[in-house]
Length: 463
Image (tube, rainbow, N blue to C red; front, side, top):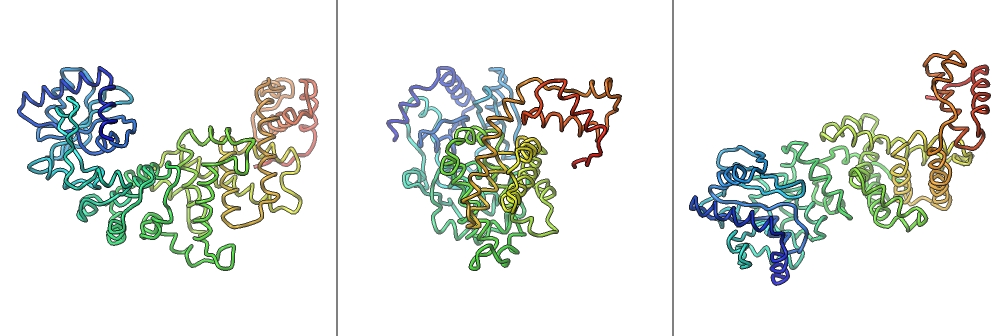
């Protein structure tokens, strides 16, 4: 592994090498040892691509300021805590140099205060530049990397920063590692400390955790950490599930795991649309937000629970909150339609309305509904054809029609039919557009005739 890593160093871009050499010169001028530490060493050993270098020394912030002044790269303060100052030099949009004051009298004391052994390694910058990968590794982080283990450096790590309770699972999921038993025991012991952490920091970790191919929700549950994050889950453990021997929390865990399977292998049930689904979930954090939606849906069984307010407490963006809430809303429409004795989506107009109203949450709603159906161990014999019908309609009719010119706009209603903007005005435009997409009308003349019929006939405005 080290030989391969040296090869990566040799292939590093000349610009990065030049900047590292200049940093080393600055450190020597001030008489300070500058070390590359933590995640940078971990990712190098794992041969993962990296987007930053983490440095530490007693004079790290001063070196960073000198480096930024001389090179012209932007300097961004990240933490101005005395004796723990951290700042970032932005090299470009994909590369950062982060500098943190050395914690303790030497690098060994600094590493002893870090979270997990795989992050408690360092190398002198000069050795790194010269291809001498002499790792300072007092806690055998390299051994844990080779054995795919997440292990605490010390129990005090959780007390120093309780967010590390969640980071253990984030690293386990993103690296596909196991958390060693003693570390899990310490998480159980200290789990309530997570309640003291700012929601913004927790949300950042949850999104990273849920962005991984598989998020160990059941393992988190076994430590009690889930109940700290989402207190309402305690009630789900007492409520009966869809099967006689299951609780609502069992159903939730099942749905969560089924969703993960769907996101990883959409071709299992939706082969014809697998690539479309993969492209969709790869954007805008949808992969993570869909997993979050499963938890929100289960908590909504409590009438007093407000999903929007809960998501606001986590300081999620308005766009993310809207995505989750709309996904929840329209997934319920799919589930209700599938259970309808009349076959809720038999009519093209019903399918059109669902696609039109759900917008960019159509696919997420279908995936969540399918995951819930599978998690509840309900019959999906008729459910899969229903989802494929909606997706087929979207691709074969809705999208092609959307790309063609409309047959009517508001100006025609204003000038020819003397209507003013109102709910009725909007309703007529929507019904004309629906008729166009469904192929009921094909010309402007037909659109105007339909508008006239709608104007002169009683109508029930949809919400």
